[in-house]
Length: 109
Image (cartoon, rainbow, N blue to C red):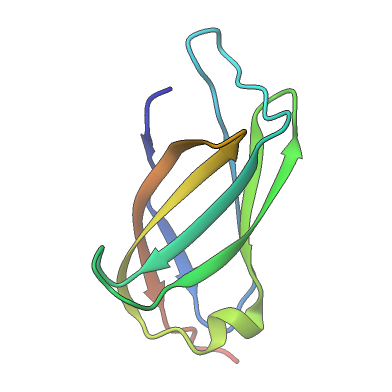
């Protein structure tokens, strides 16, 4: 499976959700038995990171969601970050999505 690039925008103090639909050469990717981990960092070598809540929402059609609550986004510093989404199954690691996160400060709170 290729690694997809998808850039996202997060507004501070708001809930964030993004659903990805994964596909392989056959047109779909079954997520049965997979768990996912997604994190964002300022740079690839940053020592600190923010972890997304990762949930498989449709096992048979390859849908997986990453999310942050308003409480989690409240203290993010506006700017540019990197993120990726990695799947794990039976000791196998598969990077499926990567990209940039733009964090913007919400005006209305």
